[in-house]
Length: 120
Image 1 (cartoon, helix red, strand yellow):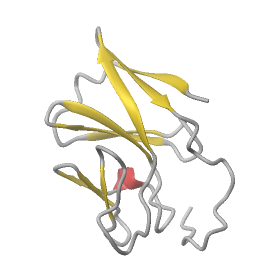
Image 2 (image 1 turned 45 degrees about the vertical axis):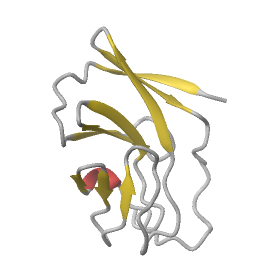
Image 3 (image 1 turned 60 degrees about the vertical axis):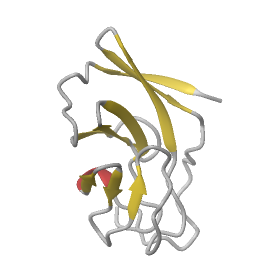
Image 4 (image 1 turned 180 degrees about the horizontal axis):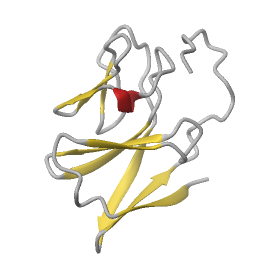
């Protein structure tokens, strides 16, 4: 089941910048602007269970601050080790000064039991 969340006016978010929305989804949401377009990912590294919003944005790559795992903001895929899987990516629209994200229900509210490092 998809759920929409209004993020407000993100016109002040410049290219190469990101903003964290801690209260959206089980792990929060990180929204990035790259080449004028907004992208949203679940704010949790699939490798180390740490906020991606504390990392660096390099082009379309969002790099985890803990071990350097990199995720493509366009689709959430990982670029290789140390991550072994991507992170959920969510559709963002921007109209009339308001950004809205649609989360598809892919976030799991249960704690990790798959061997990920727990850092928070």
